[in-house]
Image (tube, rainbow, N blue to C red; front, side, top):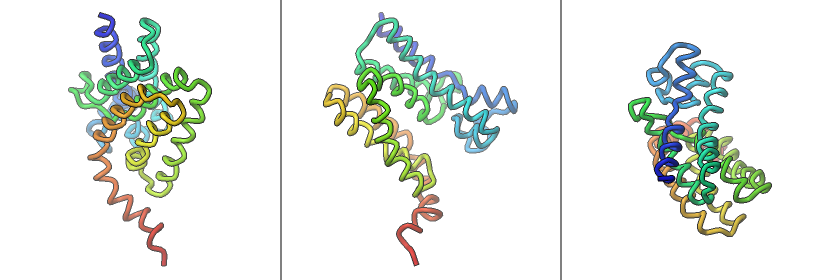
Length: 209
């Protein structure tokens, strides 16, 4: 029963469509019909304002974090199990029943999930881990100017760095599953954005006159 309750908590909290709510509350628009038509925080930044975008971003991060917080407070599951429940929260975001099962990509919710899990696993070193992952992400972002491409390229670094720091292979399995899921979700967007990023930005690094 505790697993069923945990799944419901994770999925339903993950399904709360904060960017959609922010769009309705600020400009009275359905963000699924404007801009990139993606019901994520990035579209709020583009359509409304950076302040509204931050609210939507924090909302998506918070639901990932607090879904696991409530589950952990109830049942004190291990980080391995919590990672699987975190993936369910991201499923809730991506396939939100409140948006006819069509949600965002889940990046912010994923960040919220691991902001809760990492301190349980690596304690104070969680900041170092995030920095080590942020470095290749930042470099890729500078080169491509695309958050989607940067996330797609650098996501595999995360389980590698985590395994190196913890020497815990049991946690590697759910994290790798998590990364594969995120990579599959981002594949379509990456295929769309990569040619644009290459022509506008990447090419200049390799074709200097």
